[in-house]
Length: 187
Image 1 (cartoon, rainbow, N blue to C red):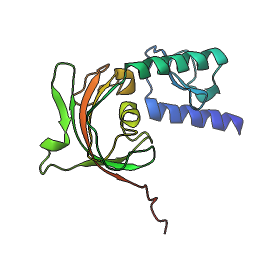
Image 2: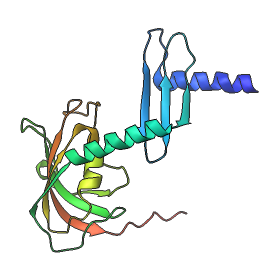
Image 3: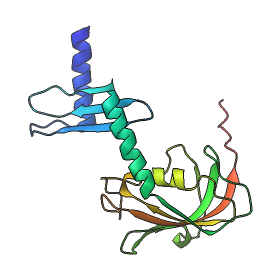
Image 4: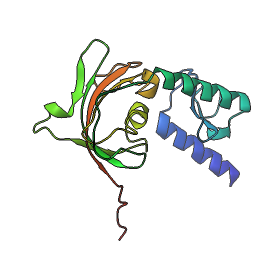
């Protein structure tokens, strides 16, 4: 039974990340909130390893220090303070936004959609880049805010459509509405 489990794990790993004979490095994703690190090993001499291992105290401290350094680079500037309800983690927020790269290139905007429509998402739950989840908390309805988001709180080393990897992001955001989250009704 144990051998079957290993074979199933190897097949699953091949389906998820693809099989080839080229040597590749270890990729890690550190989650200081969960005290775990996900390790994905892809190497012609080793078996694929898709496990979560506890972080050592040193690794946890390093991850926390890296996150704190990123938070210091997040710039939040109120352009116009709103007068309505303040957004809190877990709320559903409705916004208009324009996103730009360092050179001023607009990569996305809710205002240029046909027809222009506000964008809605649940704040602080990972539906958007972390810079939005952190940068919109406390913003009031009717307010306008500018966010300068370092790459590590944006898409990091991932290319995302028109956004090159390792790009800092700049957003002008208008908060239209703050709503309570209502979970979907199960049938």
